[in-house]
Picture 1: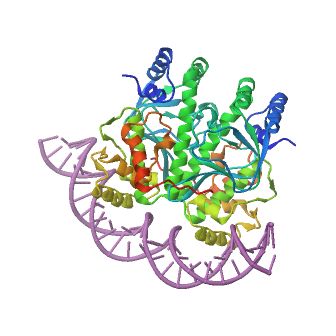
Picture 2: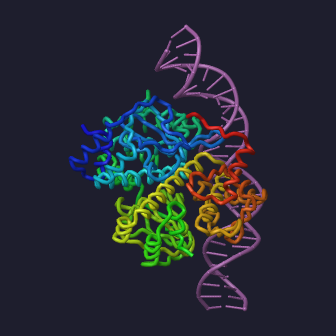
Picture 3: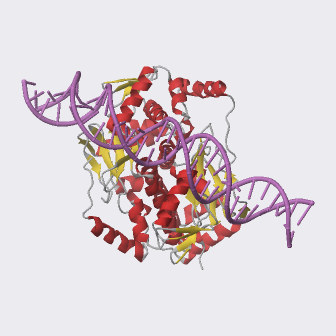
Length: 261
Length: 261
DNA sequence: CGTTCAGTTGACCATGATCAAGAGTGGTGG
DNA sequence: CCACCACTCTTGATCATGGTCAACTGAACG
C-alpha cells in the first residue's frame, strides 16, 4: 500500500516506479511525531522544513491580536505545508496539530533534488499548490455567502471527499477529529451555534457524528444542504456517489443559473 | 518608466536587464482591451492564456447557483491571472473586468520560454503565486472574524498598499473603482450595510471616498480600525507610513497577544 | 474519583439583512 | 444639447440569523 503522498500525487499525474521510490525515501528520511494541539510552525517563524503529513490532521490558522482565531485550511495525510520554504521569508500563519501527528520533514536540499530530477513530481506539486489555493477561494465563499447550516454541511462534504481521495474513508464513514470549537473557528461561527447547527443536521438525517467519527448516510442530500460542488477540488476520479450526485442535483433543481457579472 | 509587472516582480527579486527586456516583450506582444464589467474568463472554461493586467482592475469571483456572488480577489496592474494554465484543466472561478481593462495575453509557449531562460523571473512568479495565496488566507480571516467596519477598513488598507507597491498612488490617494455593491460581494455584507459602514468611516475621518477616488488621511488610524497588519502581503520595502505605523500601533495597544492554539 | 474539556441547553441580545422608496449621477441617443 | 434611463448611493423601518452569557451534563483520563 502506497503512502498518502504518493496516493495524492497520483490522483493527478501517473508516476514512474522511480518517482514512487523517490517519494518513499522522501517520506521516510526524517519523520517526526507531534502531540495533539501543539504548534508545528508559528506565525513569524522562518519555515525550516516542508512538512508532509503522514498521519493525523493539522490546521493552518491565523489569530487576531484580540484572540479571535480563524482556521484557514486543514492538512490531512498526503498534504504538504508549505511550499513557502524557498520563497517567502517568514510564515504568515501558524500550523497546529489537531490530532497526534506523524510528519516527514523535507529539507531544502532534498526538495531541490526532487524538483531537479523528477519532472512528474514537480508538476504534481504545482498541482497540489494550485488546488490548495482553489480550496482557499471556496472557503472565502463559504464564510462570505453561506448560512450557518450550509457552511457546516459544506465542511463535512469537503473533508469527507478529501479523505476519500487519499483512501481514508470506509464506506460512508471517516474519522473526524475536529471539536465543535474547531468547526466554529473554521466557519466563522460560535461554538454554541455550531452545536445547534450540527444537531439540526443530525435531526434531518444528513450526518451521524459521534466519538470523532463521521458518517454520511446520503451524500447527495448533504451536498444539497451545503451547496457543495466538488469541482473546485480538481479531483480526477471522483467516487461514484459524488459524480452521480452532481447530475441528480442539477436535475432536481433545474438548469444552473449564473449571473452574467 | 517600467511596466507594472516588472515593477511588481522587482519588489521581490533584483532583475537583470535581460530579464527586464524579456518582461517588456511579454507585456507588449499581444495586448487586448476589455470593456468594464465584461468577463475575461468564465468558470468552466479551459484557461487559454495567462493574462497580465497592464491597466485597470479585475476581480476573481465565484457564484452560487442561486445567484449569490463572492469576490475572492482583485487583480490590479502587475498582477497575473492565473498560473493555472499549465496545471488545472478548467477554471474553477471567473474573472471579470471592474474597469475598462488593458491586459497582455501570454500563451503557453511564451511562458515556457521565460520559465526556462529566466530563473529570476520564475522565482518571482512563484513569489507572486504564494503571496496571492496568502492574500486568500487573509480574506478568509476577514469575512470569518472581522466586524463590518473592520472588514471594510481592511479592504481599503489592503488595496491602497497593493496599489502603492506598483506605484499607483499619489500621496494618500488612489483610484478606487469599486461600487458599494462590489465591496458588499467582497466582504460578505449587503450593499446597504456597506453604505452605512462607509458613512461611519467617513464621519470618523478615516477615509475620503468620492467619485471613485480614495484618500486616506491617517493610514495608521485606518489600519487600527481594520486590524490591518501588512505582513501577509510580503512586501519588501513598505512605505514609511506603514512601517512606522506598525510600531506605533503596537505601542498604542501594548504588547501583542497570541493564543497558544 | 476528581478534574478538565467537549458538548448541550436556555434566555436574551445585537449585528447586519431585508424591504422599500427616493435622490444623485452618468451615459446615450434623439 | 437635452432628456431619459439605468445604475449607484442613501435613508428609514422592521426583521432574523447568529452571538453572548451562564449553567449544567457527560465522557475521558490521570
